[in-house]
Image (cartoon, rainbow, N blue to C red; front, side):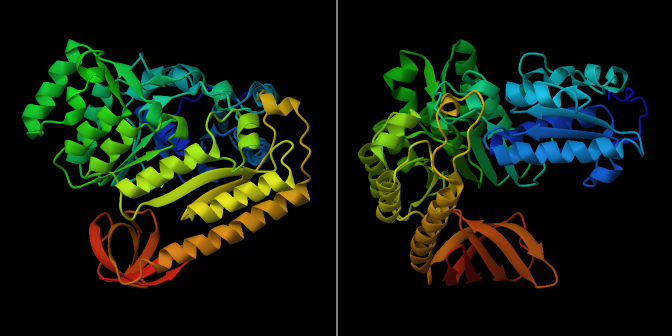
Length: 462
């Protein structure tokens, strides 16, 4: 099954990236390593000499897609030379089955070893970092938006989730590395920074005099104001940079840009963090806060350490502190043993919170996660019904929220321009898709008046 090693200098690679923003960020570092080996990227898998998959183990549907793809690629090998490799979030169950299908498997943490695995060490144009794969400078796929990982892994072990078994325990990046990466991006024209981590608001790193020296240089260079977060006992006495401190420093940088973050955990939304977020000028007024279920019994079964009332309290505090806040969430329907009444509690929560958007997923067992040992006893048809019904509730609340935007002037970061239609498409600061006619403003901020609204988008005028 294994193909010959790659020696030709002029070769193309194709990446299939499945799953969350962390996987997308990882694929940007993977692309940088491949291009360091003189590969060039192609969007056509059928012309690629090398195909890599950044896998997602969160849902079975994602893994089924990979099984289908590798079967087709192995058939293609009978007609032409082709090498394949697998990385990303892969459970042991799938790794054993896919080991005989792919030519190579590499842990993302060992990304600096990829040239040796592919037999292309001689082609490497510059030395790769050996401390952490997150130290590799990414090849950003977007000109004015960037994913910036601040931590990796998870210690929570929610009973439905595969992440702790694929990404390992939590590790937080050095704040010095994060701030330096963000500054470099901003100086090169980036307009949106998305801070990412499995539990992004749990970020927590001890610092020393070296960080103080670095931070002093940043303060001097960019004339940063005196920040309340740098006068807390946590920073001054315990020498800790947490998520709030990191946000405050990035927020003070004198560039015209947005900050987003995902995904936070309700347990780690403290009053101090809410105060920092409310003071921020760069954080967009959008809160994505996964709830997973609107029933306390289900939350306990999922090992989600909060109650529905505690969750609602966070949302209410955030809305009180940040006018016009948009709220989105993640939820699972049909988890093991979920009764009709428990599902109805989730539906009730959707109506109470009035979500702007939600990612509604049917539960599927993940091998290795604790819940995989339990009976998956909610029938597929019932999962389908609950998902559809929740989507209908969401459509109503999203439409009502969007209607309130009509007549307002909103700030938009334009993603793309359609020459044929003379139309821009972008995201508002509340993460709503909006279309409007005018000159090509891709990559720029624009002030747009909302003219009309639908459930999943807006139309506007310059």
